[in-house]
Amino acid sequence: MSGEDDLSELERERRAKAARLAEEGLELFARRYEPRTRAREVLTRYAGLAVGEADEAATLRVAGRLVARREHGKAAFFTLRDGWDDIQLYANVDTLGRPSFDQLTSLDLGDIVGVQGHPFRTRRGELSVFVECWTLLSKSYRPLPEKWHGLQDRETRYRQRYADLISNPEVARQLAIRSRLISAMRSYLEERGFMEVETPILQPLPGGALARPFVTHHHALDVDLYLRIAPELYLKRLLVGGFDRIFEIGRNFRNEGISVVHNPEFTMMELYWAYVDYREIMELLENMLPSLARIVLGTTTLAVGPHQIELTPPWPRRTIDSLMRQYLGLSLDQMRADPGRARAELRGRSVEVEGRDTFAQLVDKALKHLVWPNVIQPTFAIDYPIELSPLAKSHPEDPLLVERFQATIAGREVANAFSELNDPLDQRRRFEEQARNKAAGDEEAMALDEDFLRALEYGMPPPAALGSGSTGWSCSSWESTPSGTSSFSPSCVPRSSESPCWAVPTEASSRSRQPRQPPKAARAFPDPSRRGWRCAHRPLGWCATIVAAKQGAIPLRAGIFLDHRARGQRRPAPAGLVIERR
Image (cartoon, rainbow, N blue to C red; front, side, top):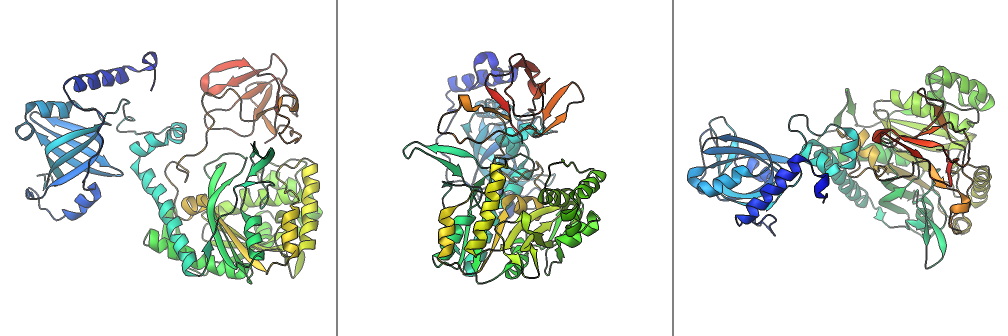
């Protein structure tokens, strides 16, 4: 609770009102209110009441938050929000008596109340509850977001998701789709013989995807552990042990940038199916998503922005090579043979590239910026370059390709799948290449996992795998949430943080147990407003500028200032920090 000096005038008025109500004997925070009838049930059960008709024999007990009020002399109308549904309340002096009526009308919007009464339909046709008695359940000390415009500021909506849900119930409805979808997906897979399993979240080595991990320390074991970036390598160990159809729905963590479709922690469904390849996975997915859509939404035709998306199979299969030819004008062979030309073509299409970008990075940027935004209807992009997929099985017709696909809908990835590599010697060669990349400074490269290689040497049946994140489920094929994210609590930089997102302790100030990974040079953009560099990653509402600092992994010298723009402050840079490349 805020200190008195930090309160707004409205908050002071609410606290004073709460004190008066308490003096009048009103309990401000009740213990329970059961039994009760949900507003949705009332609206459904009594939908047939005619104008002016009442059911005085029925006794309803509804509860929720007061979000609107209209007073008419000795009567008052309220809008009560029960979860995401609104229902009208009607109260008058004759029924409640003057003291109770005055207390009810003095309540603030945002207060949570329980009312008992009967249903009726007003002369204007609004189904309502006639209030016979009421109870204050919880006093609201903060005013609700402004009535007509709601909570519009995106940063506030992310940081104060609870206020967002109060002000924008349509956001809650969209987020609920995600929960129903996960439940339906679990049932769909179990009905087809897949078993749900759990694998470790804390892992001694990060693996299973190309991403920078979060690191933590286990004090009892005195070892560094990593939050998993993917469950892949542990699920494959189960295939070695004899499981042939398994899946996991769980949290993954990737120490990367933040956007409306990327959160550092996210839910992913990953499944493995032994004795099949990526073609069976394509058939599974293109049949599963329409089935889930019918269960969750009641239709296979979805409105995503201005587009009407039809999920009914079959979905077209497009090779990555054909997509590169169509949208970049170069084949994969041409990009691999002449990266300079590929960079020039990408720059000519306003895609930001760097001189050190590898062939794999150029292909990835072309897909993200040129291809996916133009792929609207459900499509499988298949047969990836081997450089982008170190754990996938080589294509039988071209050793430079692998059997991998990404399913895209409305310009976003919905799922990613492979024919999985099960040759331990080939896998070791690819791990060693990744290890060389890591030694050269690539923080997203995989570590060489000797225990996983040992498992493969026992023999793993040929499997295919599918990975799908909840962002893809909720934002792509299931319509975007109005606030732009499928996460209930998206990550944000704390307002009280004194360290910018890209500032990390130098080795000299780090604990001895922390991994010795050389910091990268800052990937920065010129700031048009001054001579300096701005971090590429912009946390919500809080982007810092390094004034007069060179690009590179250097300590911030005394006297260099950080400009906290959202707070309008400039302050000395903390000692012992370096610029970290994103």
